Image (cartoon, rainbow, N blue to C red; front, side, top):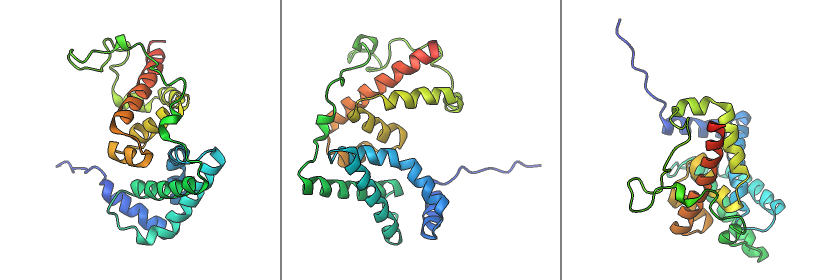
Length: 216
């Protein structure tokens, strides 16, 4: 009997189906969407306004904007990018109106120094510059095994939660939510060089946490 090929889920089709569920008033779908993006939206909002309470108000207003604008969403960008654009526009407007906008680079602040000795990474003149000279003992485990390991995920998310605000926001957007470099720069008003440095520092801290976890 011939095997039936199983195609991988089509991301575009899956997103289109999600949008239709949202437009139909599917509360479970909306709650899942909020749960997935709320943390990153709050972090981004806090880069434009001063204070968590104001950022939370901006996020709530953004979700109201999402609900009201769903019928006008044309899919020219991904759903998460569209949601982020609504949030950023609201946050910038709120920050300007209150004249209390906080420059993103100011969030780096104290403690933004590299968490891992730079000598542990390969230099620019070596092969694979920026990579570890020696990996943790169990670093070679498959990605699938790591994803299925709840304890490993707990270590990763715990390490991210302890990062300085600027590093945490960038790594959440790039490595957790999957935003592109261009989307991150546009949302945070940060240069490519600054984003690259912040992401490297954040990943270094997470790697250090994983190293302790794997070799512990």
